[in-house]
Length: 360
Ligand code: NAD
Ligand code: IPM
Ligand code: MN
Image 1 (cartoon, rainbow, N blue to C red):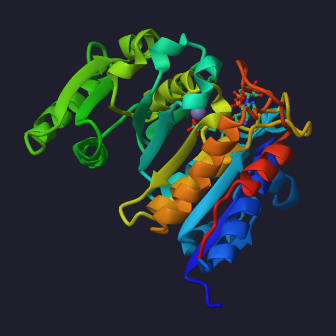
Image 2 (cartoon, rainbow, N blue to C red):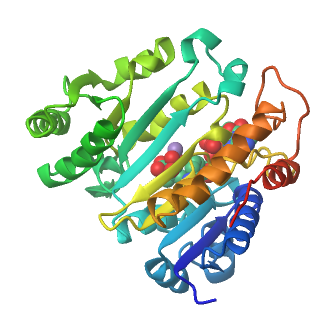
């Protein structure tokens, strides 16, 4: 069959390949059963690519990424590469992919499965039915600002937090549009009491809100937002924030849903090409043990089907299968709470695959 959608798989390092394997197995199975016309290609990225090619992002990988309609990335990085030259670190590959493909809009939904309330780090009543969306700006801010580096005498290091009105406005629009489709509440998180860049951020968001009168915009300082997320997370519907704050707040939000192993993400450009990745990293402490939770990676495939490939039904099939497995009490080791049998990575993949309800 002629391929309609090109998907690139970038397994990366640590548990990246372990969770990617399960997610890819599932995607292939759905692709074949439903005749979705997806072609899959795999390339090397991160530390493993550095070992083989001397760079964490080989040209062939970047070229394949540009060609793809969507990318699934596992994770990059690990202690082996922590001390190598800054520009050759595995994490640089991820940042370059985001920037080269202009994937400025990072969507990180934190949704608590009804079956996992006891696994959240908060009391069940605080998180019951939690469904919040973090919209993180992904190609600007302090991650990419210039200048960055060291002083000549090596006694000082610096990064620059910079945002243009244009960059703030485009991520703002994504967040307002997302809020319209949800509960119409948007909280913009910044540090406007200290940072000039946040004062601009707040101004642009406020101006933009005039175009979206149906959305109730509020502003919150990031330190308070971190506290509010663990005090009363259900007050939030959509959160929009810059690159660094979004990184930190999304790891906090992950734990509310039971584990960092549960949180998927989509990183989109203006054409809805996307890179999809679990929010977690390469988890060096458990890599190679076969116990990583593959659900965030599998949920990322569901997001890919929905956002980049327009295959909503196939996405729902995956999400329903995950719910069904959780409802039967199956858990991975990271999910600490009530529940029955603990499964290894591949066993969880098998269970989800078995529960797929596929009708052509
Ligand atoms: P991490 O997310 O890899 O791990 C934090 C903790 O969560 C660890 O105890 C780990 O075992 C656990 N964990 C994470 N994912 C899990 C899963 N799927 N199932 C079960 N447990 C899971 O964060 P870290 O330890 O700070 O970072 C490790 C490396 O990963 C670093 O090199 C970092 O730069 C990199 N990293 C990469 C990405 C990415 O590629 N997108 C994201 C974050 C961190
Ligand atoms: C994430 C990761 C990355 C980030 C790192 C690995 C560059 O933590 O995707 O959350 O900080 O964006
Ligand atoms: Mn992170």
